[in-house]
Length: 339
Length: 269
Ligand code: SF4
Image 1 (cartoon, rainbow over the protein chains, first blue to last red):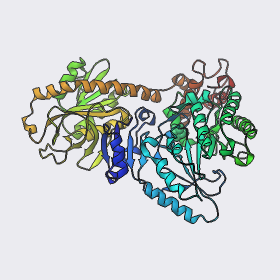
Image 2 (tube, protein in one colour):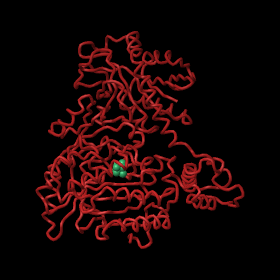
Image 3 (cartoon, each protein chain N blue to C red):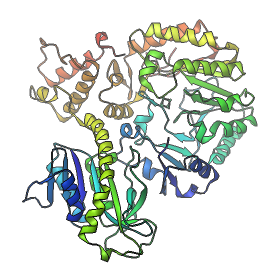
Image 4 (cartoon, chains in turn brown, orange):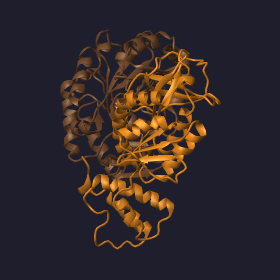
């Protein structure tokens, strides 16, 4: 899988580094002082690197846990995110990571204990409300589980902190680390879903949607709280029919008593990221059709965004309790926040 | 077009023969050889000559950009003579600056860090490759092509038991001959990557023709390029403006094209 692994000198002897290197004993190892030497250099081409990404083992310095942007959340006012990884095994064409980072190499920060400490600090400072911690902002939480043991380790940590909630955001069906342990009420396994017709084309390398639905159904059967993330909503031919069928397929399989939250998200990108992505894929119609700029964000023209959002909201509300429905903020919809 | 840089004529000779390259221009400041799909420049020894030769070749053939490969002999403390090594990282020892080739391919052979030194030396301080060009090659080539398209492969010509003073032209040529399969493999992979890079660099259809119709500012040219790329991605077989359009100004053409990019008849997927 990985033919080359860059290793920060400071973590060269860390047990997680040694364990990872042992898994890839054939990979070439390249020392570096700081992962940024490799990851942040100019003149790199994300699209080219995505063909054969390397792994970078590094230490996360500075702030490990950050507040989410205002308006994002699934029921709490106190929301944080953290990234034990940068970049993803999959290659969704709409993914903002390709506009955010210069490199497609996958960085794994192996100093989990520092993340634990930072999470504990935030929990201590949060007296009134249940804090939520989102993983999977800069990566897929589960896709690289076989290498990182991220969920195995972080679930053990969160099991001892029942007053804080962890969200794992994923398209992966690598759920064995969850299935082999008792469910945690304070861990939401949130699956991103798109109609198959469009996922097959744009979510390159991700498991087919039917397998994701099966995986989330199985997890719910075992008692895990499930999140559904229809994000981004994508305008395409027959989109009404495709979204309706997707919702039907999900709710035919899912035990809704384990459904924690459902959110919708607009296809939206900061203009600078969008420009980079369009330059990487000048041949990609997703970055061409029906878009408009508003307040520095690129998204679908408001009439398209509104019809997509309204249709999906109305369809979903036939299946779910409105109290667990969380549309994301948008600059496209007329009032700035999705109704 | 695939570009190869060597420092020495003896390093170049087997490559020239393999690709049937011919001398290109006797008046050029560096020895240049060319074939239908390959060009080679021989710089002479050292960082300055390397940087100048790569920059010269890139500028001279700017209409045919392509990937670059540095090929040459190098010392190594412990590796056996004749060992082929792909350069994982080149360090300019004068400034201690590292240059990483950006990887988007499988390494073609075993790899090593390369130390680029200003003077030949026989002390081989670390277990790495030693040459006098590598860091300058990366520093320069990465200014002209994506960092994934500039690589270096070396063959070990001297080590702590067989010093560089005993090198001769025949041995160098023999080693480079042995390196040809690795060069060929790099070439195949780099050309495949370059094909994608060239799509990113290319002007879209109708770009030059539209520029000749009326005056565009630089900002408008950039917008035109992007809009035509977008148009081509959603409607590759349809002209960007209807045949009877009446737009005369650059701004009018751009606005009309932008409006057409939401036309339901061109909805992708
Ligand atoms: S799964 Fe998520 S993080 Fe991974 S490429 Fe797709 S959108 Fe990006």
